Image (cartoon, rainbow, N blue to C red; front, side, top):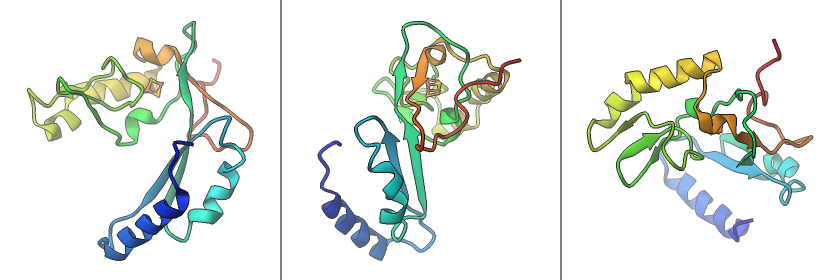
Length: 156
Ligand code: SF4
């Protein structure tokens, strides 16, 4: 959808795999959205000879009104986003660093990753106490597209 030539991508990936370390695993990650739904079910068959992992994420967007806290695995998946002011956030939707877990200009990254702020963020998520941004976060859900986790907390 972003204009990438998939054949060319496959050729580059094949070349990379020929030279990578044995222990390096390759993960294909894509976002499911209304315009690529037809393609999503075939991704496994088309790429499983090259990659060890395939992840399909829902498209995320923001809602007008806040909703129930989401059950979201984004902060756990090891995705770190670095901002030009040094802030570090575990969510790529966190445009204004509301979920910041530290700043690399002030602290080494390993301290940030193992630090109190990150731990507190994850604990709060488990309790359903999420940053305001998350209350507006909405996933594009669709039948047949495997989502990462249940979309919402179970109703009490
Ligand atoms: S904004 Fe919050 S709920 Fe949405 S993807 Fe990021 S961490 Fe998850």
